[in-house]
Amino acid sequence: MTASDSLTKKYQAQLSALREITRAISAAWSLDQILALITRKTARAMDVDSCSIYLLDDGGEYLVLKATTGLAPQAVGHAHLKFGEGLTGHAAKIGKPVAASQASRDPHFKYLPETKEKMFQSLLAVPLISRGKVIGAVNVQTREGREYSSDEIELLSIIADVAAGELEKALLYEEIGGLKEALETRKLVERAKGILMKRHSIGEQEAFARIQQQARTARRAMREIAEAIILAEGV
Image (cartoon, rainbow, N blue to C red; front, top):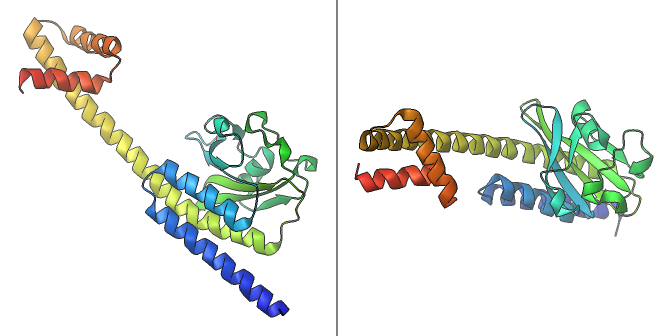
């Protein structure tokens, strides 16, 4: 096989990997599913031992581990880096890829014991940027030292570009869904309070307290209690 044939084969493999990741993301129906698919497909496409995604919190102060293929699963949602901290945080802060064949020797390195990442040596991190705004970072790691090639850095960067747009949309949908749920719950609780106030000749505060108490006793959501009160009244 000639050098040209080898490059063509590698390029085709990269395109295939990108196509597979794009299709998987498009088919996903929730943020958690999208995150899990990206880490799993990326680890396979890049032939690495770990792939992890960190997303910036609402305050823009911390990058929180949201999904991983390779690190300790229990670290998801708990492990975090200050923005700019560690190789991954540094990549997010400068908005450029950061690579190290021996990550622990890099001055930016930050070990997160809860992730059990001590087994890994190399690390490549790329920022997740959507519409010019950093929303997080994705990194890959290997157990053996590895000098990441320009092609590998480019591939992860392209994956990050594709993923960032989808993740931002998923985050927005999740936020909108949460706000919608909260608004609907509030409306139901207000209706249930009105029913209790009229039925028992009590004030608004006491009616609300009764709904809270029923929710705690039954170990159910306030929305469920409110719906039951409304249903019983036939309103």
